[in-house]
Structures are given as C-alpha cells and as structure tokens.
Image (cartoon, rainbow, N blue to C red; front, side, top):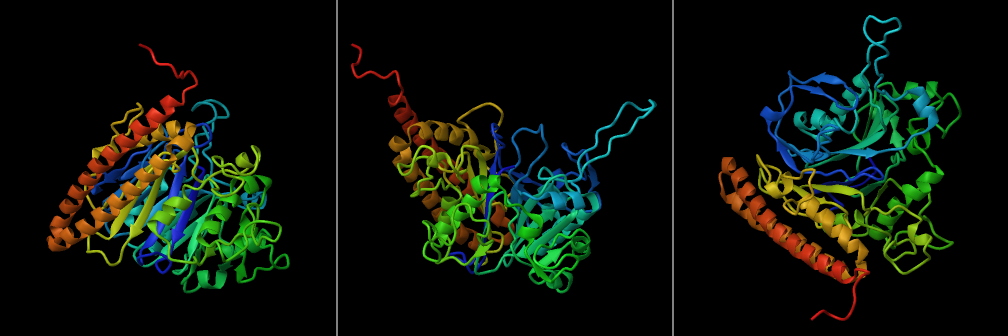
Length: 505
C-alpha cells in the first residue's frame, strides 16, 4: 500500500511522548473503507490463515492481550489491522510499503504464493505452496503478544526468518521509552534501528535507513538489530556498495545496499520526505533554489533529523496532510504552472484511507497513557480525533463502517466532505480549517479532563471512565462533522455549473 510515516522520539516531542504515525493509503484507483475496533483476547484467532498468501500459523500456545486495530471494513482481502496499541502500552503500525532493487530480490527472492498445478492424481500435479506474511497479517500476528517495542522487532523478525514475506515493508513499534523501525530485506532478511530520542524520522514508500552498525546488531543490540546471517549474506551477494567487493564493514548505508533511487522515486517518494523536513526544519538547510542542500528529488535526504523545535500532535497531522503548500508543486496553489502543480505525489492525497497517530504519554495515569488519534479519508480535509484505546469497545461512529455510503459513520462522512470540498477548495478551506481546529481542541480538552477523572478512580474502573469519554468525544465529533458536511455541500451546490442568478417565482 502507498503510505507515509513519521516517527517522533520522546525528546523531540512536545510532551515527552513517543509518537508513531502513518497514513494508510489505498492503491491507485481504489478506495478501501476502514474502521476502528478493539480485539479482545477471546476474539484473537488461535490459528491464523492469511487470505492473500494462504499461510496458516498456529497461535494456540500464546496468550494474547487486548489491542486496538484499524482493519478493513470489508473482509474480502483479510484483516489488514494497520495500527494499534495493546494492554502493555506497546504500539505498532504496519506497514509502509518499501522499494528494493534487483540484487536484493535475486539474492533472497520474495516468498509468493505458488498456486496448485493441475488436480490431485493427475500427471504433473503440484500442490499449492503458501506464501509468506505481509501487511495483511503483521499486526494480528505480533501486537497481541509483545510487551515492548524491542520485543515487537524480535517477534516479527523471527516470523520473517521462518515464513518469509511476499513484499518489502517497513514497520514501526513504540513503547513509553523507545521507538524501533524495522525494514524487510528481500524474502527473509530484515534490519531494525532505534529512532534517536531527540529526532524524528520521515518514511515515504522507499527503503529509508541510511546508516547501520552491524557490530551493534550482532552484539548488544542497543540501537540496531537484524537477521542473524545478514553480514554473511551481504558479503556473499556483494550488496554493500560502500567498500571493496567481497568485504563487509561494520557501518554501511542500507539505503544504497538494499533500496532504490529510481526516476519513479523522484516523483513519488523523495518529494514527500523533502516536504516534511522542509516544514519541521525550515532553517536547518536550504530547501529550494539552485543552492539548495536538498531538493524534492534528492536521494540523500536524512532518515532521521533533529527538529528545530519540539513536535506536536498538530505538527504530525499537518505534515501527513501536506500537498506542498507554499511551493510551485501545490495542487491547490497559485504558484508555478499547471504541470508543476501535478509534478509530485502529495502526502495528503485523495486515497488516504486512515491516519493513526499513536501517542504513549509517560506522565499520564496508569491505564490512560495511550492515545490513538484517528482520522479517516483525505487528510487535507479531515480532522484528528483523540480516543483512548485502553477500553473493551469503541464508539459505533468509528466501528460501523460498511460497504454502503452513509453519514452514520466517520469514514464515509469524511470521504463525502473531501470529495465536495476538493471541487470548491477556495470556498471551503476556511470551514475545513475551523473544523480541524475545533475537533483537535475538543480532543486535548477531553484528555486533560479524563486523565484527572481516571486518576481519581480505582485502577480496575479506569477503563469504564475512558470508554465514557470516548463516547462523548464521538458525539461531539459527529455534530461537528455533520455541520461541516452541510457547509461544504452548500458551497459545492452553489458552485455547480448549471447555476443561474435569477430565481424562480
């Protein structure tokens, strides 16, 4: 899936939280409805079978935790749980589809489903061979069973080594102290790096880690982890491009070894990192003009960066909604030309399905530390809603997405708003911005009030306090969303081409 990720270390965030966030985008020409749900231990499968790869994995000897997830509303392609937080206050976002190169995919081919040939008993019959795991499966197979971000890396790494994968992906894990980013390398290999506490990471659909220490990964694993045979596999297949062929230094550049730098990347991927880092570090580098340190098509934009100021939830929402505002590349702007305004792929695109911002707050009362900020639909026109995931169920407004278009749920209401507002951007942008600010303010106010109420309640009663707050939040957000829908519908109706100034009567 085409997506965009930002990871914010605890010393780079405004309140000491770890924050991981990702837009999940539908494939070109598709719009995948999403919903929010809680998965209770009794509802977690004890034997899991992937719809896409037909792989079955036994989970019966594991004890699952409750966790939140953002699955597809339709089950024709599997669960695709996308993002969530478990009872141990561990968050996971999966996945960011990545690019690779021919050398990697030749050295460790992806593990695709091999369909049966013929029928049993016929000459030449070959039975079906399942494929590996993929984005459809990873949250369901990992998040219920881990108690730290590091454990998440190791569990997923073990599954990749055993079963393989049929696609290149990046996966984020966080707890109250650490954030880890894992990238799959070919069919069975992987690397993972701890996000520096004082930095943020930008990830478009491109393999991103730009420095890796094999000695640390094979030793204490303080900042780096990897599949156990990575050094030998790289040397055998001549993958390290920073040293003489046949050798493998301790520190190398995975982006050069395992990734891509294609013409397609320069249109689809690198401009997104440029746009985010240009916003969060406007004075650190020169971003435009002939003397620019980095431009939209630069292949060496850093994986991690220290921000010029602390990063807020609103910053995360803004950068994951960007469409190159203030540049000749803004599809809604007046700068540049008709060609330049369509040159690069926006972050806030029409195909955004959902945005989950997973915030883990060390200062909040026990049982209340996790916040799952949620938005559905195109990020240029939606709002981020604060919800507590430490509950047994979520409000119906967020869980009830179906195939039928309806204003009864948050997903479809936002899809309608975006389609109408896009056609009348100038007439609706002020109303959209007021809506986004109002819903964001409601979220911060709800968290402040509910944290105090929960702190005064017994530990075993806190989940009920949070659930009640979520319901109030859903009611308030629905009222604001319905109001915005009415406003953009009016503006779009006034802008219809068959309008005429003279009224009947």
